Length: 95
Length: 478
Picture 1 (tube, one colour):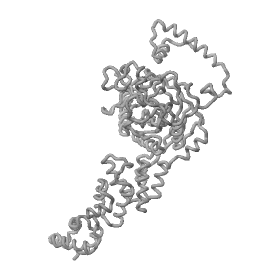
Picture 2 (cartoon, chains in turn purple, orange; picture 1 turned 60 degrees about the vertical axis):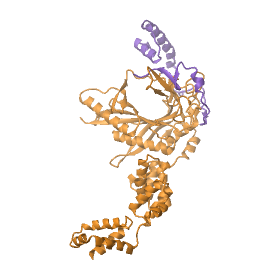
Picture 3 (cartoon, helix red, strand yellow; picture 1 turned 120 degrees about the horizontal axis):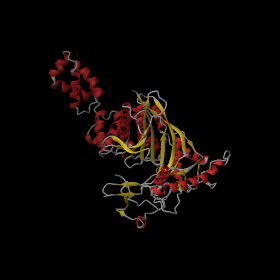
């Protein structure tokens, strides 16, 4: 289960992590070891085990459809690096 | 080379809940930016999503209406991608176990035949926010009011074979979700949106060709145009020995073309996995039965009933049942008139529809109520007013001049049905047009229409046309 350098670059891009070219072999080795560790589970016999979506054996509680949140934009936007006319400002996302 | 088009649609419908799918923020359209985005919608650390039960009921309602399987247990998953209109870095959606699966609808094709379109699945998910690019220099503005609005994504089987069929299917779903009251269907506001997967294959080939996914299509008209453009593009590519690349393409309605957004190599790898913040959704049979009891008469059933009970053509029944509100209006008119369903249908689809269309009004805001229109139709049926002048009465009613009787009285539009009065007019017309009379009597039958016209004109359109015909025929003979 050894990851290729190309796979490492893909994973880094998906996670929006900038990693140096010189560090790729290092990451490939370490990530591969993590996968190998988890791959031990492949040896478990799961024929009679129902797939599990959540470790808790409970169902989702539902809420009533009522508006409970009031407008607190001014408070929330104090944490934003930049706002304008009520909008959160981010680096340009399209060409 | 003959190509077969294969289309599948993914329709996103915003559910008509008051609050968001996982938070208590409001979903109303048009609020000032970010005033309806709470900590959950903003993706702050430490907050947890709690599912809105109304969104679940609405999904179940849709599932029942398309004869689908409602999953007794379904699971929410994280769809991971980075984009600022989704602050968490993932969208909560459903992947392996959607709430609704394997349903279908019937669409009517142009030749009158009906075709079953499979619906693979319909799953609950949250909408993203909106990014605004215009008017900003080097930056983008983000409005997260829409983030977290509940969506039901309805995924069809690749059963559609032309742009026309795709539009028909889309309209069918549009009508259905409005009947069910789960979506307002407002395409301008983005409540009802569609992506289309389009591919071509050689006629007779079983394997599907490589598909392109068309995004950003926000009207029925554009769906048809975008798909037709894409069919042309792919056919040209294949004819010239090229290959279609699997990619996402954006439809540009101004240029009427599709262009590449990103290809498969750059495509997002969504890395779906069950959302640990949300336990599995369990839907008990009791809930399904309770929702089933709230189902209204569905469009197909209503259409069939209209055709049978009112003796309407399939086409007319389809038009009158296009929305629940229009169908209710029509039935109210028929009831108030006390029958004559065809005359009522003609008025509703004719004068009323034209006036609504002209003034861009919704049936629910019609200035002429069902009772008022019935009042007018009754006056046409009992010969108080001619069919032609009734249109004038209708316009006056539309303009707020009162009910039919008031307008007819005020404008003196009562039809003349007194034979002796009509005869008198005919005699005057005959005297005034001696030359034509002689020509008619000499065998120029065509002049009959001329005399009808003259009599109607002399009576200001008020003479009963049938009586005019009968009496003229007698009088002209001499």
